Amino acid sequence: MKKSFVLLMLFVISNLAAQERPKLVVGIVIDQMKMEYLYRFSEDFSPNGFKRLMNNGYVFQNMHYNYVPTYTAPGHASIYTGTTPATHGIVGNEWFNRSSGKQMYCTDDTSVKTVGDGTVDEGEMSPKNLQSTTITDEVRMATNFEGKVIGISLKDRGAILPAGHFANWAFWYSKTGSFISSTFYGNKLPDWVSEFNNEKNYLKYINKGWDLYKPASTYNESLPDDNPYEGKLYGSSAPVFPYDLKTMYEKNDAGILRSTPFGNDLLADFAKKAIEKEELGKDNISDFLTVSFSSTDYVGHLLGPRSMELQDTYLRLDQTIADFLTYLDKTVGKNNYLLFLTADHAGAENVIYLKDRKYDVDNYPSKDFKKNLQDFSVKTFGVDLLLNYSNFNIFFNKQIIKEKGFDLVKVKHEFKAFLISLPQVKKVYTEEEILSNSGNDYYLNFVAKGYDVTQNGDMVVIGKPGIIEYLPTGTSHGTAYTYDTHVPAIFYGWHIKKGESYDKKAITEIAPTIAQKIKVSFPNGTEAKVLQEVLNDK
Image (cartoon, rainbow, N blue to C red):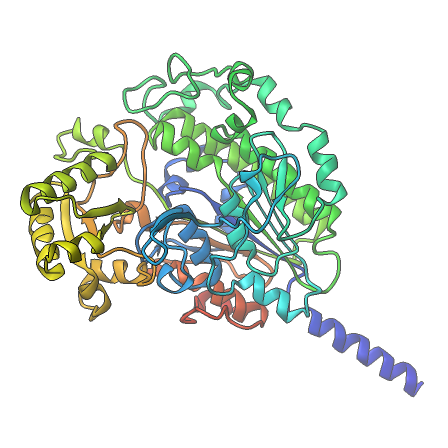
């Protein structure tokens, strides 16, 4: 009897310990999602997708990014590391690196090779450029590397950076229509991935084309189907429904799926297959699945935030999420998974749309801005001193400055005076001002948190509100203004109480909150400020 009682108590204690962590953590990132979309499209959402999360989870209505540039790679890295580019080192999607003097991509790694049916360069990727650990890394270590971590996305950076350094696998979409990986994770794709790829699931979406998901009258939150603020999808004669995806595919490749809502559907199909075949959430050792839906970003960039195409993409994504939640309920169990949903950045209104409504703003292509700087340099100093301009960073050619005997301080002073005189510029900060940041300048704080002294430029430019460096159609992002920083943040599931907060929060608080919630170490670069509201589950 005593032995049986001891065994029973050990069993109970073991189960209680297991309940301190969910069986599965799911991180969902929606690329280029403004918080406002949850309000604007709300009447047309089903009760089981976004509304289910908002009505039954904890919603942070005022979540923001706290650095620039607000791009995809820094966004994903910041969500999962709980820190900013100044610490984790992912200072853009691609950037000019002052230390190497070369252009680099966020996940480039020529020491690894493509695994799967992708082109050579599509798979030469790894997390080696990420300088701090992620919450996914900490889960791996906390479970003695028994808990699995899988990262998936249409974009390489959306899969690799969230999955961290110790992931079992990261998979991303190739223009061949297959999900691929790199030798950083393994020398051969798991059999289930190869089987999924061999089914050519992307073709069923391409063959049926893209028409409106709901009756046209539903889309009264958007501009007319054909409006001057939209770009054209893969050579289409006009930005109007229906879209013949089959012809686009025949003239291009399977990469066209990214710029349709069906890229999200294919990713969700793949995510469910990953849960099934990798047996995620099947035991009491916590696993972590990161899912980044990228089609919203492609559609937003090309067609803009007021297009029927974007609204249709979100109405379809709502149903995709509803279906995914149902799948999690059935396979993992309603009370066994912890899920959070957020975005890697938001996005601006189309600037010509604003201009046509008498807001004095305009678009300024980056190449034109760079040419302006070069012309000023030649006029003022007799030579082009600009080494590079990208991601709002100005890099000077120090070798020419030294050879000509110019004073670098004076060069910066002259350029700053010129930049401030331009109609699109609001602020300009030198390296010295950034590194001596006192914390009193609101926009300087954004710059400082996104600035890595070993990689960034000699000066950083902040444009005026409403102005973007982009084309006249579609939209972009990257600034410190709320239209780029304000994103959704919803926690749902395991030990999450229903509620909402309107206090301003920072995106870097998500990872340390999860660490505290599931009792693992903080990612090593985080300041460890947490979202107290979701830590109290009673």
